[in-house]
Length: 624
Figure (cartoon, rainbow, N blue to C red):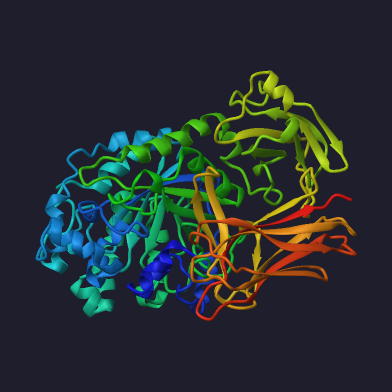
């Protein structure tokens, strides 16, 4: 179960959609006019960039507080809805007074320590290629001199008229470009407490949205335009097609411009130059892998904006940050990693530390990230992979036993295997390799002898083929014949509520996926192409987490005609407290040429409960 589920009794479907839960809004019928807009090829620079910085900064950065399960930039909404058992209201009353209005935070948002050149230098040193700043979040406060924002509300509501009394968008845009990075702008369609938005949405679109978007495009020329807050109303209500056409027609560098997919209710993953995921969630829509580039956005902790309630353990580790980038790129995406500056204009040092850890890693291994394509084969037991031309890059998270790395599924003329050191292919130490019945074997023992110790986050080995290799899509076993099937690689279906979630795992040094929201009997997922041995007996294990009170469901695993079931009679310590459970043993009499399919499903679920979170299925061969 996602951590956000505990919010559902308190917040509207808006909050559920933002959290990426299964309560996301249904897809609307796609206007045929979108087809011509979608036919545009995504500019190549964006797919090659791989790494961008998101910034959530505004009036909400003054209180910078909320329940650690969610986003502090929603502080005003949490107050309005008395969310989280009144946590934010109690905090607000104790620190600011019950009669203190949200708009009174504006003069306290001073940004007196904001140094745009320093920010831009941090982003450059992090190895990012572009930046996206929240020019206006859902509270409507603008980080540029938007006169209409103040006029409509009847009080100063932009950063030039109150608070910093500076054009924050303009200053940061200039500094980011001076550092050699592309600049992008986030813009929220919705606005809380706006008299026009609440009373006459058509007038709001005409008098607020259109003028503000024109100002942002004409004045600041963002290379990335990143709308949000669209999910409650169809694109026609926002006049989205008109906006898209105007931006593309009037942008001074339209060939380089990219826009996301957040243009109306149910359109995520269906329109725009790139598709967006958020904290690993796809917003409840069908998978879009391969149709357009995608971008995963998330913070270094649970909130985008700075949340003072979050402690050290709420932040991802350096290793997790690096592997988050690798795993996102290996799936064919970009990572838009967020920082939440303080109200006085400082980026918290723990966030800077995580960014610079990524930057140091990229200084050595950037060739395995920038300009690459998704992994040429499914996730491996030892890490991940990317590709570029005739080179396949192996990012190693775990050092192989006895120093031999086994890589299955590649076929081609291999020119050399090298240990990536950042010096370039000609200077990288070469490694010995041999082809065998399991595929490619690489001797890493000599790398240790040469002092090439594994990187603490991920070492990289490059396979330079004479031409792009052929790829066998089947799933091959590890050297000991076992299979570890990760939830992140599963194909869902049927899946009324079931979805793939992503959570940080400090023990594993990175983000881990799991199947969650398993509330419907019959919902399941599958892994295809398992090269198992016919006649071999396999033990079946599942890594599961069960919140107390949800125990009692039955998990089923089926491979071919063989099937095992296990009643999950004991809970764990929570939805992210995993333990390994033996489900039984099975034997396949025959294995299809293309490999076997393993399917996991919910055979029984207690009424009103959820089956479990499932992180992986393991097949362990028994000795003959």
